[in-house]
Length: 127
Image (cartoon, rainbow, N blue to C red; front, side, top):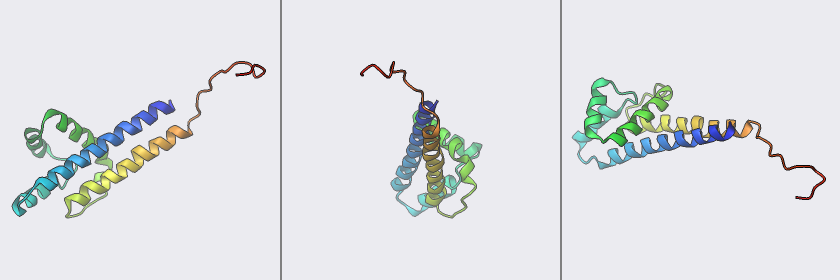
């Protein structure tokens, strides 16, 4: 059970890191102030509404959209904890909290679970 939780923690952490990395790439690719202001309004929320979701689906490919959707679901519990004018803060803090809770927390839980003992045989026999 511990190894399954450990694998889950790693998988979730990868999704969170990829989601934030793709957000960072999008942000750094924007050149003009008008585009940055528009993007800040669109990306300022982690839980997009139906119209924002549809626009994002048209803009990105299927794999990217799947990662973004998984990232939205995983970080939704942390999204309401942050209310900033900065899109970086609104995405960075929930991503960091997600990594701490899902990655570190689930990893610690996996390490605390009892491990399955391997039966090596009789103690009197040399191994």
